[in-house]
Image 1 (cartoon, rainbow, N blue to C red):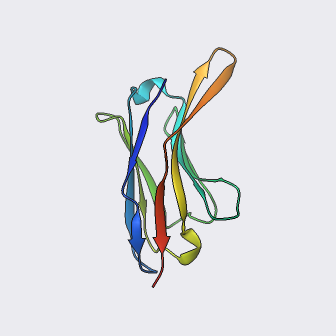
Image 2: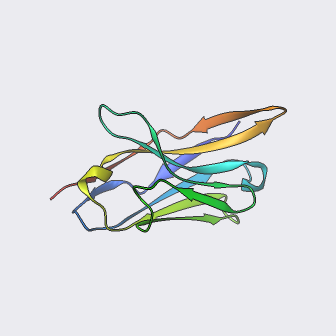
Amino acid sequence: QVQLVETGGGLVQPGGSLRLSCASSRSIFTIYAMGWYRQAPGKQRELVAVATSGSNINYADAVKGRFTLSIDSSKNTVHVQMNKLQPEDTAVYYCNAKVVRGASTEDYWGRGTQVTVSS
């Protein structure tokens, strides 16, 4: 089991910045992949950014150059710094952790945190 607690959402004006954090109850070193997804109203949940074991970080094309994922292994926490936010970034942001179980992986999700970009 992995419990994930997200913090840092809120309301921001276009062009502004926010930093989301996700704290894991389990050591990051035992997690295969950890990152962020988002879901806008009426849309499917989509990848924002994810770090996999080996320190590979992948970003969605929509956020490349604006969002930066970082890991604080001492606190089992993953952050995403979001800059130059636009209204289309408005969504509920979910933290995700993938744990390997034999030949398969298990997904764990946080409760989500709302990000609203509006003037």
